[in-house]
Image (cartoon, rainbow, N blue to C red):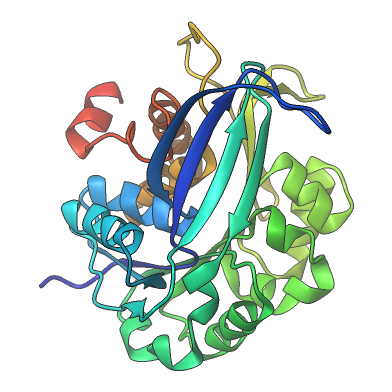
Length: 314
């Protein structure tokens, strides 16, 4: 087996995607469509990289139930090494309930289950040390967060840390995340997350993260955001004293896109470009392209393209 280039560590969930007429509070509405699909932030990114032909592996935990088997099978179908995914006996696999309405609004509820059973002994440093990149995302419980804090202390300089904190970790604040941020080579957030994390706006927040030790800060901006400098951009990238603003492709949406996993897909495209030694601007363009494919179909993974498809659109 070839050397594994990117290894993910994070939650593994089955996502229950519910399309509702409208999001309500203290009321009721109709579920118009429901779909179950494997998910988890780092897991989605690793899946996307595997579809692009990158040798990948994953560390995490599932239960010994049908949902766990489904999540493992989905990884194995695209060649992800699952040898370090622990199957926890008599446990349920993690799941999320994702509600979305026709206005593009979303609510996500997480039940970690087996993810909260991942132990320190389940994370093998020798396995991680073979990688060029280790990609982390959030867990719901402090136990696994502390495992990640200990993990980064042992990573050699030859392994670059990629970190997507998500809302759960961003809300912990800068002080709690400082040991991770100091070791992070590439930080992936969206606009809301970086504002939660730093208490500053987009550009000032990115600068703050660089000051703390991050080498590259990537902020995704959804379908597009008008910045003060003019123009509409789908992501903002900072590296040292340089910034890159990635404009959307000319394609327009015929309907409201399904955004579950779009940020994870962006990270997959960006990391693919980074591994291929592309410019940061080109990495951002590849991320934007992957995210657009992801949003064409419901769920985080079904719309993700193969390498041949990506190359045909470049």
